Image 1 (spheres, one colour):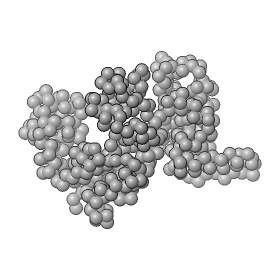
Image 2: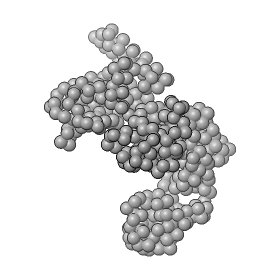
Image 3: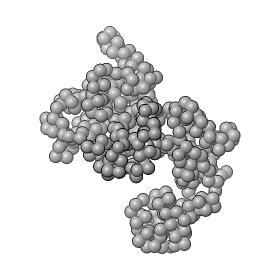
Image 4: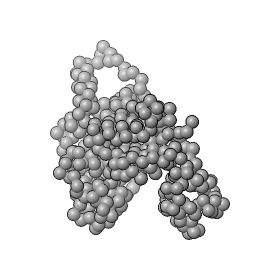
Length: 391
């Protein structure tokens, strides 16, 4: 049976989510990433900013040179992740074989389910329609017989379109005279090696099969197959991670440990929300620190399984208190020993106060799950987010 693969790619996702929150940003050159006076790069930008040459991964100083009148905003990854989860729920309706490449991109293998929904094209159009109606965002959808063909098809449809590549002949006809970078797995260095040997476009790869294989070895064999339209990779739903973490690099080295505790408090909240959405708890909490001289340390605490922000912060805060007080460049938390085993019941010796804390944590989690993580919180958390430009 011929495979049917769908690739969904949200259009300028981070920027589009910011416009959802603030419609006044619509139609303006919006750059998500570092601010012009900070060190960093562009995470993504609106299509209006791209007209000035701004691109993802570009140094923020260069972006500002190209687009000094742009609107520069720090990313809010937790906000984007909440929207991403809602988008993924739409995809999950059509198949249980989904590979999430990132928050805004993924592959769906609908080979066995397409006919239930009227075919792959109907599924693609339905995903576009539901994403716009339920989320308020547009996406580009590619349909192909393989992962590479579906990916290239979605790029053909950008922004906001739907494109289908039915077979290998159709793919080769489309890309035959394009730069070798169109082939999956051909990065900057590989392209440079090929071009130094006179191989600049896909047609050159197919005309110099032995040379490509000799130049690049096993990777060259893969590139030749892909250029010929042969892609046997399977859409893979990755297993649940055995650990999860979050870290923050400061624009300036930090000596104020209360400021560091605020950063950890926000990270604990983010991580707690993530694992509780999956019904998980963790056995080990680890503090990661990079000092100003780039020396890194980790400190861990293991014990009863925990899941709430209060429990995670209590563990990591105690670890912070024990490290030497020197300027810190980066701080982070990781949770490991994740499990979905049932929570231990409180014993007769547990206090009513602890029970009330657990009830309050559950109520907060339910509210955050329904209305968004940053909609429900304390005034201190709000102030910390503003100070840290929390992402």
